[in-house]
Image (cartoon, rainbow, N blue to C red; front, side, top):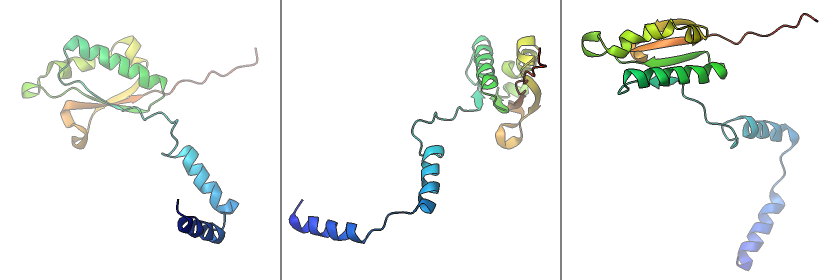
Amino acid sequence: MKQDDWNVWNEFIQTVTPLDKKHKAPLLKRLLTGRFFLMKRPPLSTRLDLHHFTLQEAFGAFRDFLTEHAARETRQIIVITGKGAQGKGVLRQEFPKWLERADIREKISRVETAPARMGGDGAFLVYLKRKKEHVSNGN
């Protein structure tokens, strides 16, 4: 740096006053808990699109997706099966059968057709159960 630049810099830092605690705390909190915290894991998508999957691949992807979200205690996921030709798509027809399996049914509280803005008849909203808290009775 040139001497003139150093002089300007030194004059500038003499005029700057440090932030008081009242102003530091919100900034620090935002940096540590907000979107700026670099160690935070990226959010997991709650949407599974099964287009272009075979029936077997789609079931495996759905089961794994459901298991991961149940473990993370996600409340709602969206599963897009597509409508198929004339509304008779294979995945759309099979999806309700998958939900009847005991290992899947135990994780789900309810399922409904998605609203039009989320895929309509070609998608399902799946609401997941919360994990039950284990209460100790003192024994």
